[in-house]
Length: 238
Image (cartoon, rainbow, N blue to C red; front, side):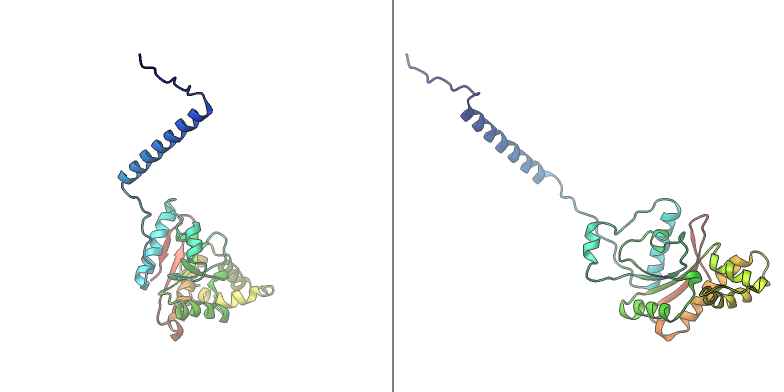
């Protein structure tokens, strides 16, 4: 009778290595086949940067609707975006807003890193540094929209009205804010209703009109808006 060579037990070190090597190769081949058969998945393409004032404003208001509904997407906050804008920036809107801690433009409009050029002064008061900053955005970064954003219950506006009512001296540099907001408050003093709220809108419109009248900002669309602290909504002013 022919003799059969004795089988080496699988438990031997040599056989275990051979078995594991073959098994790994089979798993790798199967995984490669599955991956090849599966449909390719790609990241959604980033939305194009708005190039007109109208498109930029629509993007801001769409983001604000998300914010007001507690459905913010928090775009452009990942590492890839940080790398993308590390050496150059292309924001699509200048937002001149108040320093109030409750009105951060990137959150209010649900935008991210590199999307907005934000300039914040109490009561949106203009000075040469602010004007130069806006001009930099319009002339050098070719930003198509400048938005002046006032807000409900503005403390700078309330302080200005208090000074107009009482005549009390305003301390230190705050006097510059009162001086900048005062004409707007005085212009609507006889309107029925909330003097502070009327002034918030009137002042945002007055700052908008001052920017529109300056030839340095002619390439951009300049609008004014009011932010409601209670609802989270932004309303464009006439």
